[in-house]
Image 1 (cartoon, rainbow, N blue to C red):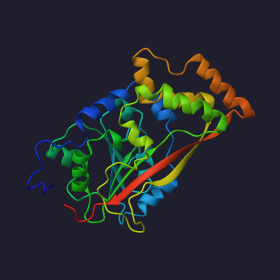
Image 2 (cartoon, rainbow, N blue to C red):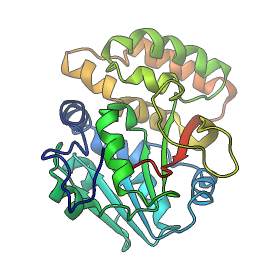
Image 3 (cartoon, rainbow, N blue to C red):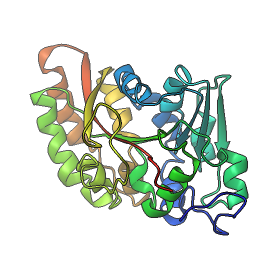
Image 4 (cartoon, rainbow, N blue to C red):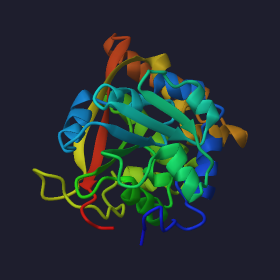
Length: 287
């Protein structure tokens, strides 16, 4: 049970959990610039939906912010955003805005660090985590989320996006590449993304206007040329893991196959779609 700060939290609080989070930070160090440049921006409709479920728009914590894709959009709606990550390289490429406070956090934080770096008990309107929840030790993480959220209407929103969709020709090359070539190099946590967060534990109450916590589907659309598409694929942690093991996943033959499929219709730029899956709930009077 999470208690008031006057009755201190446990000595060690795993706000951004130790082993998985350390590994995640390391995986994204080498391709941080590619990640910042090619990762898609989330659709405005996603943030409008989330914001409609929080009565106040004062303070939000974006956990595992990476290079700040979600934090930037949240900053247009909420007065102040605290955006944290364990990777200094990722934060280096984050867009700076006056109402975003980026914080490098250790993989573990004490109760006093949680209050100092993030927020006091029951002070946040919203906690968000984009494309990162599968890296967390969820039971520990959820205790901290519930501790910092306002009761009973504070909201927790977590979302992921799955693989890009272009057209039948490009996707016919992509699908075996993703399912067969890259599969040995993904961390086990990736399965939760492939499952659209459907099977992830989510101990929160449905927000107003809904009868469940999702996943609710949205879509990202991004105009890309083939080189940008390749750069996105190279930003994957699986690509970097394979490269570190001496394996080039984007072989010459595969690049040729992508080239033929991409240029089949004579259009150099294409709209690439990324399905987004949102889990959202309010904290209630749980603790």
